[in-house]
Image (cartoon, rainbow, N blue to C red; front, side):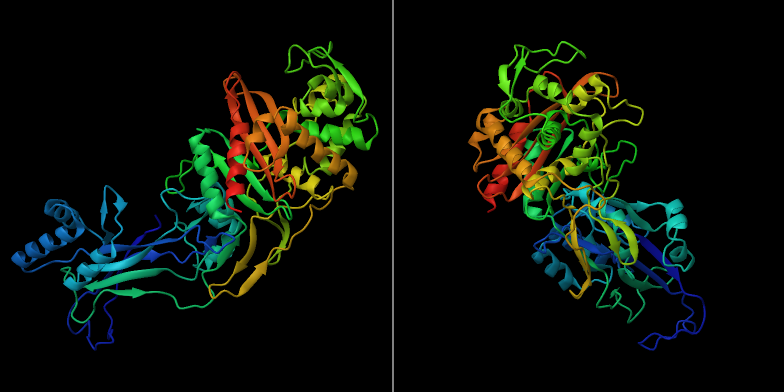
Amino acid sequence: MNIRLFWIQVAASRNWTEHGIDLVENSVIQREKGIVLDSGRGDFYDRNGRSITGLETQVLTVFPIRNEKLEEGKENNAKIARILQVSESVWTQFVESLKTPQVWAIDGKNITLSEQQSAQITALRLPQLMVTSLKQRYNNEQTASHVIGFVGQDPERITRQYTNQFHQGELQLTSQIGGAGLERSFEPWLQGIGATSVSLFTDAAKRPLPGLDARIVRPHNDYYPVKVMTTLDAAIQQKIEQAMAKLQIKEGAVVVLDAANADVIAMASRPEFNPQHIDLQNGTWANHALKAAAPGSIFKTVTAAAALEENVARADETFECNGALGKYGLTCWNKEGHGRISFREGYAKSCNIVFAKIADRLKGAAIEDYANKLGLNVSVGWQGNFMQDSNFREFDAEEKGQIFAESTPMEDGGVKAQSAIGQRDVMVTPLQAANMVVTLLQQGKVLSPRVVKEVRFQNGRLMEAFDQKSVEGLSKGISSGTAKRLLSWMNDVVDHGTGSTLRSAKWSVAGKSGTAQVADKEGIARVNQWFIGYGPVEQPKYAVAVMVQNMPETAANKSLPLFKEVMDILATVQ
């Protein structure tokens, strides 16, 4: 909660109030006690104009002033307790503990007033009480918390990154600035021009000064604070987060992109993260949608693209799978083997042996090149010129992943065989994985996902827009024919392959499964479960990537039911 308290003592010089009270002549030390109701920081909105941050609630501001009439004070306490529906002792204890102004709270949690309670308290006309609108930056269950990030104190960064604002007094060492997510990316523009506060003037004995009631002070400016308009759909985002909770996803991510332009419609991450209670050490604030992880067989999409483009294998060419390759220690997930199986069917049934044999015909450099053509091994999130920043990045701490580690001999047969099935050094982010599907839907064009579409002034006027763009610096993409072929192969995966359980989805979907073998921090064997795809097949609207991370090897696959839940949510909102 962004509430800070302040106490200002006015120097003993001749000061006249608007009511004509000479403070020096009356020998009174004026004290202004107040609460910040709104920090003045800019807020985030979804693509429909729905506020994601900045929840405004009606609260009771209580000032610690002295009541000369004991009996009158007791009577008022009883009235207030009845209105607030608490015992008189609870209310009295709260009031008597006040040293500075506070918002009425129980166990540290601010209490929202109903319209009736607000009206009843206002009618009492008590100088120590005031019903105010408090702007809380984050909700108790904050939507898209990992995307939005958090604010907090960072004195070292203020002096290093915002030197001019610090020296000009616009920022103090105790100022809260964006620590992660969009809060960090857009920090310079989110900073407001002043807070909104409520204050009460009292004398040294904590008695209200005659004629100086509690008053709200706010900056008057048509332009600030700004509004950051994201591409997120808050309703879809909330439903996806609920689906992850229902399936008890402890670690992983979901990314939903608009198939037409790669805009981020939803981006959810686990473990859960509450920006009101930040533990920098446990890392729950990290956005797993932007963190690279072993992809497993979803990477076979890259190997298939390379093979088709380089003409090293035909779609109908057959291979023998008996469950093991016979070298490099590589086996198929199907221990019995697939028997005689075509390249196309090898993709649908995710046969490791087929892809290891195909990798033997490819150069390691070619595998890396085609990964690059599909938007892997590079940061894909929107970056470019924004407000005189020539290298502005929307996504904070986005990782680019890798195909081969720096010291890995990429032309070694064993390295190629493992890499072709998304193992060994291969690392991909869920954002890249979802965007790879968009690339196929866009016939080989690698678009750059946006999560913010524009920044607007408070009065609605446009400050700056983020144009749709492609990822820069990539070599020529794959052909439209190969892209269409791979999309049809994804349809096979659901029709009769490893994703056949998705045939019960509310609309027709297609995609590719993946299971990557990894080890946790203690060295215990785990798996990353993936599914990427699109829907509806007839007229694709969304590309989706789901990753359930660090699951026990014997655990049931949760990526398929999660993908289905996400697609069913998207089908319902149409």
